Length: 99
Length: 176
Image (cartoon, rainbow over all chains, first blue to last red; front, side, top):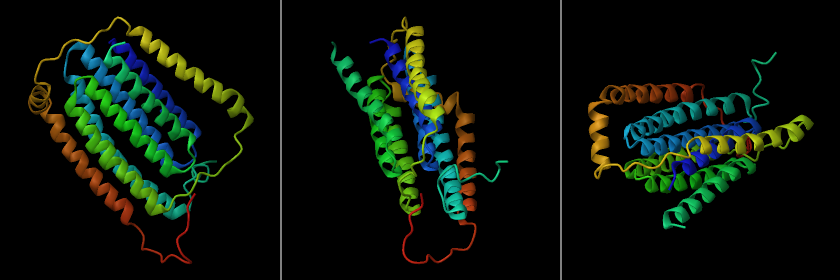
């Protein structure tokens, strides 16, 4: 089975993540779109690793998962602080830096 | 059609349907459940790509830990459905077609560029060789991630504990 199927699926998932990131307004859903993009990249890493017959791709995926876990912890803490201070999760209302 | 292709198509359909549902649902908890189905389908695809260790880590860390954290925060904040705002005319007539075009173009170009690639056989004991790689060649980055996680724990604690708790007035409130 050719690797390009997996890469095409990875590209579709990454594109859906980008679309969710741009179109959604709830900050938690935007965050979930980022996780979706990370997952798509993981699939591409493993597919390329199999295409080259090497295991380094899987090591990279391992590190990506670790970093994603750390990022989720810090990011959700930031979301809690924003929700507490602004009483809203809508990114259009979180506009303190906007001119 | 080989059985592998059938399994791939089923899992890919689940993953894409879940990803589309993440975008279409307006309530964050529904998006979170859809994202869990995407991650489980991806774990199946990792199994198909002969990487059992990463498939199990995907289930435990992503579908288990990270998504539980998401669901926990959604429940904690009592997050309600996304506010419906009128999508601007520009976004509706230019953004949506461009987004679909982006998807098709990206998938086609990347798929076509890698058409000649075929899977190389990995050796028998993938997980054992992976652990050797992780603890020999990549031992310094591996140790660095422990410091990263420590900093993340401290950062999350500092961020989340700030401010004295205000007693809620008049029952639970839905934050949108």
